[in-house]
Length: 259
Image 1 (cartoon, rainbow, N blue to C red):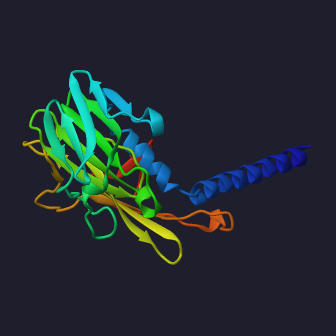
Image 2: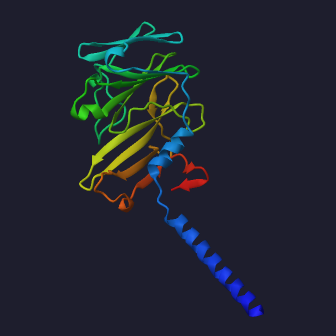
Image 3: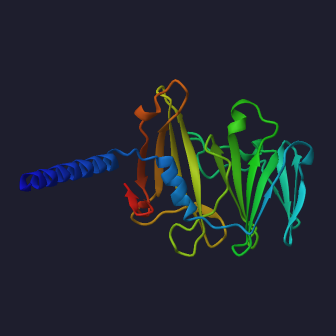
């Protein structure tokens, strides 16, 4: 009887060790989806807008709205987009993006002819615009622009994106009472169908403009996401994402720090 009990205890111990090793192995080999990591991190840092206006397409498209006490209208003028905010006119004809939106090139904002979205941040006295070209064809359908307008100083800051989404968000990364914006630069697709996007930190200065954030020790704060394109004939499990950061902190989601 004692032999049977001893044998049973040994088997339980072996099974427990095997299960523990398997669990550790599963944790170690679990694939990190950096796109999800980035999204969750940014969600934890963003400012919530007071109001959002989404401009519908086709027959319901608007060109004049009011967001609380702010009257805004827009129209095409001289092959550019003219926006009037509380009586102040701004025109995209001579504007270029602060960031490189594709490779090492800035972009001219006069390609935009439509206001796709406006966000009002009332306590920050800021308006955020997403500008597009409509109707679009070819590569133009992947391009859009972000305008940040300071209602107090009437300053304008322009950014551009290509194949990196159409959203507009403001953030607080430094907890330094300055409002932050995160630009995106698309570096193209290589022969292996691998994309690279770089995120670069900009902060608002005392004059209301946004400029690239830097310190005496570090001239650029950014992180990169390198990711493969997924299509039906490609084995998703064999594809590897990469993530590199030169950031203000280690990017953390939940209790996990991603280096």
